[in-house]
Length: 391
Image (spheres, rainbow, N blue to C red):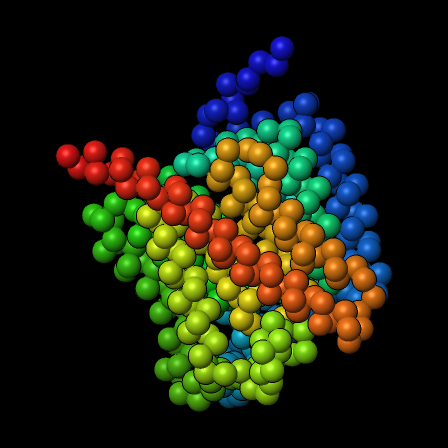
């Protein structure tokens, strides 16, 4: 007979002394060993042909920002409108900007991979309204599913901005659930300051009691303004970064509908509407993890330039969503692995690109539909409880 450890029911905070002590307890050591080996194997596979393809843009941005030249500093985004990441990503990359590129690649790649495994442990210990220490089964299952995919982001592509947006978004949601309005607003704002596509994450703040809304609006809006406005004030040409247009790639779902050339003007607003609409449903149902998954699903479904590392974000937030439910088979996570990640192991070709476009379309539509059904089902009892408490 298995006895439930009292510590597993106690709310703790990741990286606190008690969390680290419990996360390294003896019964978890075999799980950590398996996941460590598993992560190293898939990391080696991820870098066998390509290491940190996009990492160089981050130290480049940091060098421009801190160059002191007339064409540098706050002229960063006017000079390089193709840098579609936020100032927080630049600041985080700055300590590595002075190193040789190859060395900084390895340091950043290892750190981002470790962060991925840490986020799996945090999510494995998360529950509906708080954070606990990870139990062996969720940690093992989550790690086995997520860590083969995560190196696409941390090691193959090296997109620091997405790592920051996802991590800060997850912790922002956890702070909303813990009713820490200032911390929640700050972390969600920093996610937007890392990567603008994280803007819909802010809908989660509506789940806080209304008395906290003015405070969260000030913190959320203030930190976003503090990060971005100096660039626009220093150089009005920074608006070019907002107007920067990607072209629709052959692998994009949009290409299924014979769209090509520059991104249509309706795409970004459509992504925002999808994420915010489902986010409001998630707030109503008190399933805030769905906000992150809806945002990523809308991005993959409608983005003009689909990259393999998008799948890493999808699998992480899908696992976060699965942990919001009573622990069963993590269907949202499995769907990402089967429909988005596994096909990437096949040698690409023109015919296979067409197949993967349809798989992305099916995953995106299916995930959003499943989220709507899940949130509507959860929303009915939540509204009923609110009505009874108001009476």
